[in-house]
Image 1 (cartoon, protein in one colour):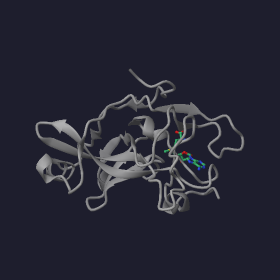
Image 2 (tube, helix red, strand yellow):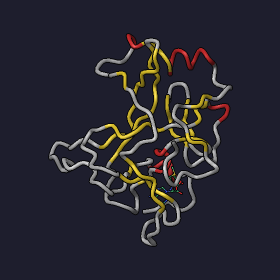
Image 3 (cartoon, helix red, strand yellow):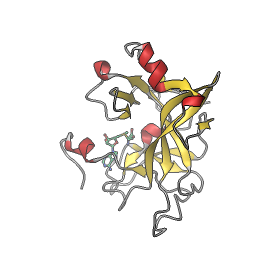
Length: 197
Ligand SMILES: C[S@@+](CC[C@H](N)C(=O)[O-])C[C@H]1O[C@@H](n2cnc3c(N)ncnc32)[C@H](O)[C@@H]1O
């Protein structure tokens, strides 16, 4: 099964695809390790796509800054702090970073490892930045550790609904049919010619 509206020229992934240029000892120690080495308060998760809690939706709204592209929308209510889906793609080191990619996310800063969903990925590649769309983001990236069997976990980037907040301003979470929006960070836009306001 492949999600509805999935582009033909992008490979749909159910697990990360590792670059051959990544040193296997780095992968084996930093990204894939024993459950007993999980950071405190972290759990081993089970997750696999396609994800029915989200919907890839072509944007046909002239006031949306990504008009003509697509976005990722909630197909059900998503409560604060809940896990939505992992961000999958081509996992690579600095040596094979595509500087022109608009889909590259950091996975491990210390080792300069990124996950690029420009040519392969899952529904998460369609998540837009909140700037020009909404007053604020409603989701964020957090590390997750996925149970890959044999007592091992794999570090990935997960997308989560923002927490309710101290004043419980965001207690509602993300409503059904609402667009899932993160902050790409100012750096993303400062490297591009026409940053949205
Ligand atoms: C990771 S992709 C997001 C999915 C993209 N809209 C698509 O249909 O493939 C990042 C690209 O989406 C567009 N984008 C995302 N958020 C945007 C925003 N707030 N304003 C303008 N363009 C945005 C930009 O072209 C950006 O380079």
